[in-house]
Length: 259
Image 1 (cartoon, rainbow, N blue to C red):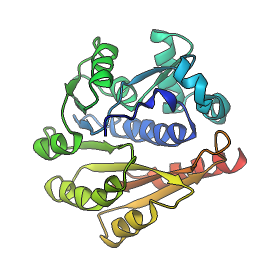
Image 2: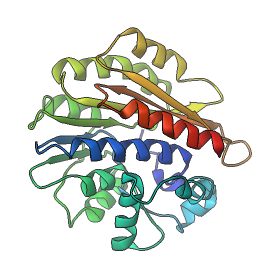
Image 3: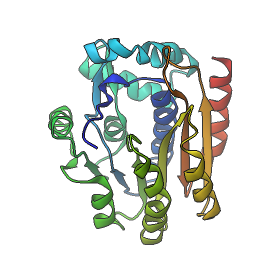
Image 4: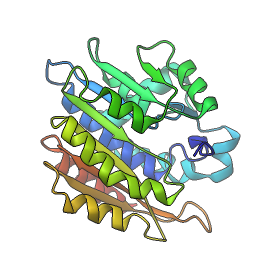
């Protein structure tokens, strides 16, 4: 689907959940003096203005990062990435996952991003022009299968589709199983929304039944950003979870519970 644009949702509670754990994982992986690959299947534009018309229209950032920023210590990787983004792009800038990864990675690491939406792809290229990233204007699932196993073999893949159609849910278990077979050392992180419809439940059950290596799921719940909003939580399913990630996820659970 080419209708989804994350500018309306940037900095919402789901982003806080996803990006806080992503930043933690990247910080953990880059502590070791070995190169790594970062792959993202649905990158978006990578950088967002939280005062833009789209963000103000939904109010999701106001209910998200604007409330949650104070949850984190200043030295938490998520806040460090947020501060670095604002230092370069201004006080109202918010980093998408491609920029978080770009800021976390080092010389010698590989960064490959896919974004099929023409407008979002062009914005992504512009936003990351000063950095070293390979941006693909192709289907993210096809890109991921084509380059796996990547070089370097150590690394992380983020899968973050829009889930606008049921086919997205249906495709995820088989896709993740395929990637894991081709790249059995890679950390795979799937983000999914928790909606009032419960559309994620069968997908998550199928993933858990596959007994993928060192896998776990982490879900947080929160109130709807506005009347009628169907998203009431955020989920991550992780394969080859790095040491300590589950403990970090538990700390995040406590933060959301106090909100």
